[in-house]
Length: 544
Image 1: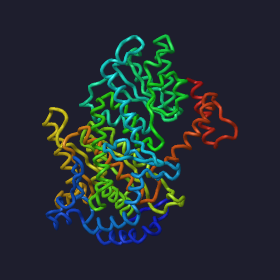
Image 2: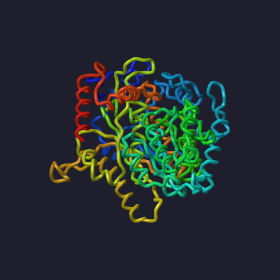
Image 3: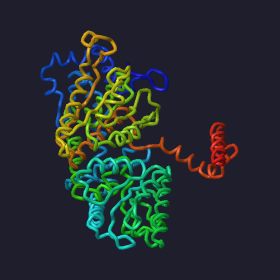
Image 4: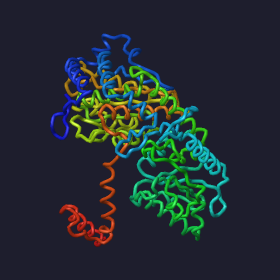
């Protein structure tokens, strides 16, 4: 059941992975008829043997269609693929982003030890600490009311303008840590659809609003369009261009463009080309987090991630939780033909986590070319999706339970809530436990009384339990998934750290903007469908 790639049956990768891959294919055929119920019936200690703890997190792998032999064979694949060597190369600052010739060192951003982190032979930790201290000074000034706008009033609202990793990460964390938020109100704008910035500004006071513009190049079309709209709104209200310096900060490396925009150079926060966008919330891109919850809490987030980094860096493969998570995703995607992976947090505060992990995984491993430039003949990154429970139970769980598709799912829950409504949390926990049990056991037609009421069961799940959704626990959770995604990329032999698939549409959009404004296509520039759509849109706009 290896699935298909571009319409043809998938093939195993070449040596050195091939032998381990083929051993797993044979193993899958042997155990395909063995159910999770069978495994639990024969292994009273299955939970104890297949659940592990990393940092503050309990991760239960026992409800997977896997035996001890399965894990041994998967670990052989990890060794053959060079997971250990790739991990060590990343922490050593080697240019593992081969497409762009860059190091991948987001782990340096949350390095809480005194260990140097090197890029091109130079320790980057002094720069990292300098930016963290700048973030502390800035966030404290805003939070304590020392930062004043053009009218002398303190900041009540902060708008983060970014897109992709400059938006999804900060938005996810700020929402998750809302119980700790004691600073200005945070708002996030990313979509170039004017409704996003219009609706946000409609409820804000220019005199008390601060904007954080997150764009490494300060040229990203969506971000800069929104930033210029916000700038115009502010200047119109203030009556002076000088107000920009009191109401904007930039998270960027393009000092010339930032200066032309009118932002004070003291309010520009640097980050580096060895930080990928989807791994950047730990950098100055996380300034909105520090403003919302304070720099001490932001550093607790870093500490939680660092704890998992150290586990990933030092733990043997057989005990390495992110490695095991990555191996199981490959197990279902490449040997059972599963094409999606569901992330199901049982905590409303994690409402943005599925979207965040969607980008982290699909932008990283949605590749069809190996690191050497050859076409892959095996399935790579899964489609990632999800929604918090219990909302999802009344939406798509029908398909999870009785549908024809195999969907491995991660269930995430805190043991204790961040609110005083304990009865609500008891019910939430009961639903969390019930769903994974039901997906595992199912219900036979004989038990149910009819085929329509029967459940096949045998649906694999991972359960992740946090003591409480603290900044530290959240940092550990995010890092756990980051390293799992990294592991999958190594197993599939793809470069997880470029995103060339994002570029073509952006290039074409820039060319199309003047044609949309003029209401007519450039002759010979596009296909017949695009030309037809341009003309139809122009006609509709003329009619109003």
